[in-house]
Image 1: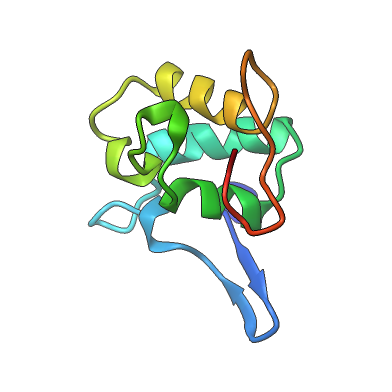
Image 2: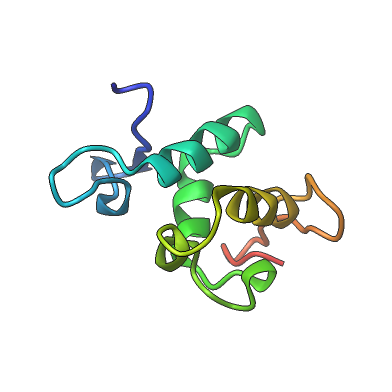
Length: 100
């Protein structure tokens, strides 16, 4: 199970963002699918976590975390790929941590 968990690393320790869990503490399948794709694209855990909670131009400014229950997983995966330059018109995270 630890292989499926997204972790955020900081100077104070390692954290597992709550948005990857359902109310019953099982892993959210849409977030797990996105995380698997992020790992395949070699996107670091911290960058992926930031992408999940930041307004995404590929999703009309919405935060991916707010859309995991409303959009098809393929739409979110495509937005992830474009956001990190793995699809048409995508960009890379800037030095300020925002995505262009």
